[in-house]
Image (tube, rainbow, N blue to C red; front, side, top):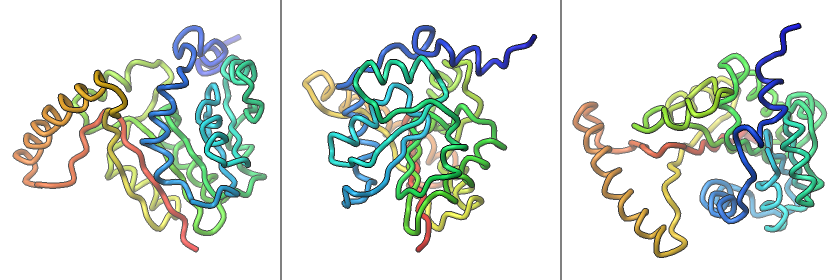
Length: 236
């Protein structure tokens, strides 16, 4: 009997690939990638799709979003979330969960690269249907424009698709979202060492953007970070 490669890899995803989540790292990423795009109303219903070990759910709860919950396909990841005391994480198919949900925000960090193009569009349709008016989807995905995208995209056998700002806007529009904005994910300054990284990145990324401007003739708007965040808004 042939086992689907996803089933086989996700059964032991943490022990064979992802490792155990580091709380400090997830907090920095949350403050950079997610928190600025969340509604001020802490009563908002927020679901984290492909939540892994639940660190983003934990951050949402710490910041007052008490209706936050997450879902992931990997039993090992969900077990680690529960062991860490994050009971709001469940195992299952996020599309099935969305079919009966009514939410204000859907987050998906490091999920959509695991989907084929057909699956990605179907997933966005499911998110759009579950969102209330003025709801939003917040996705973090590999940036196909980055010179280093291969390091991330091909570093996981379960990765299928990479994206650019343009293709993310295309995906959002196809699913019915009225607005899609795309944001860079640069290093975060939180220590002396990270401050040096931030300075080095600013210099290096400036050269990358200059090269892109020279090739394309477009002077602004280039995003060269390894990942980008897309915020898709449903009209009222």
